[in-house]
Image 1: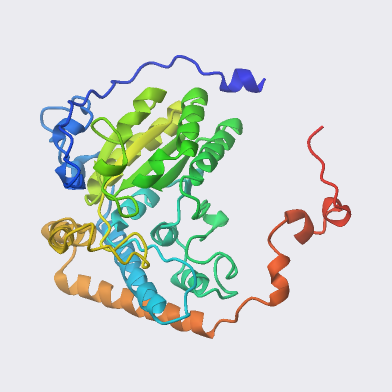
Image 2: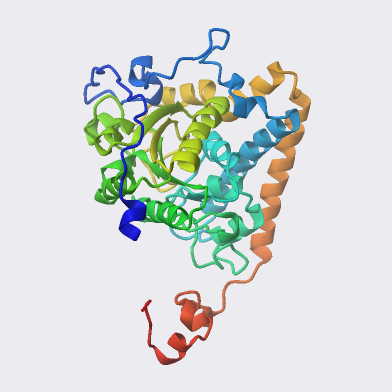
Length: 404
């Protein structure tokens, strides 16, 4: 029965992207996100003559945005930025945050754009750079900052830290510290949705360094074989941990193009454009909902800081001029704010108020975390096994039963 349910059929073939070969950069020149050409992107379907296919504001999903909703998306991105800045200050204070801290500055439009499209049965899972996704799905700054400081009021009760934010009630299945480890889990969530007959999707995020992990390719194979409604989203900042892409990854035209070998549709998105982010992601979500087909999305983006706050060489493998160029011209918050000003949706004064409120909220979250208690020592054995916590028969006896 399961074989019949998941046996791959031969669906109507979608137009296969046929990007032209790109000239690889020499080893000394990192492959930067904005160095992609239009030849690297898949050919979009024909659009009516009166519609500019490059103006993603005209996409139906964006035409439905109200002025209030547009401002709310800006507010969410600003809140993520100010939270990350506050987390950096807390990390700098010796001993306040243990372990690593992977900031999301510069990539806010990706998480916000994707979360804005989630429905009842849409899920999200990501890697260790997970603060932005957590706030985008509706988690509070208080529970997130408390988790960073290892406090019992944190979203993972102070046991997970920066890389392990979770909110199952919001369909957010968290950050994962093992590179690529979330990709088979994302495929598994999609398998569940299909098995239960639910119209949904799983957005599975990863960095560009994860695409060389075997687990990712195994997940692609299963997604392509079983036609799973999973969307693999590569947040490509061009450097993985600290090595330029052209020196670390072999690929033809784009990282997403690898999906072609698994008979999976793929696309490229300029992640700093929130309109484009939403328009192209909606296509992938519709494919998952209505066709139960996977998609691989490569999102071109740029992190403002290093791989983590422990990345002491962040300005050695990237020039300061390059970093400043992206901050000036590809900052998703500035681009979205300027777009809304042009549309007469918001004024500079209103943006200043939004920014001020986000800074105050971030500062208050640190005060909340400061005043929160640490977990009790005996809590270390809790939240490991469900059976033990719930005192089930298996937990009482140590016997675990599987389906007959």
